[in-house]
Image (tube, rainbow, N blue to C red; front, side):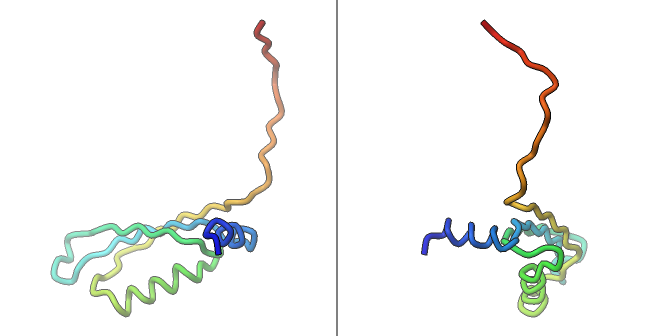
Length: 91
């Protein structure tokens, strides 16, 4: 199956492009924060895929999570309508 078709199907089901920024540190260097960015399609507002990934991180990765910041945007939304305030003509 074509990846573009799968992405469109997810978008039509309400999935949003979600970016998670995870700040973490290694137990042997607790003063050094590092950043990990991860993008996926997920359902707002519960974000089940992000939660599943964070559970995996906690169970399988040695690094301790300091904080997580999410950004999400609907990819299919109604057209934006802006009325025209004026008209300019060039000859």
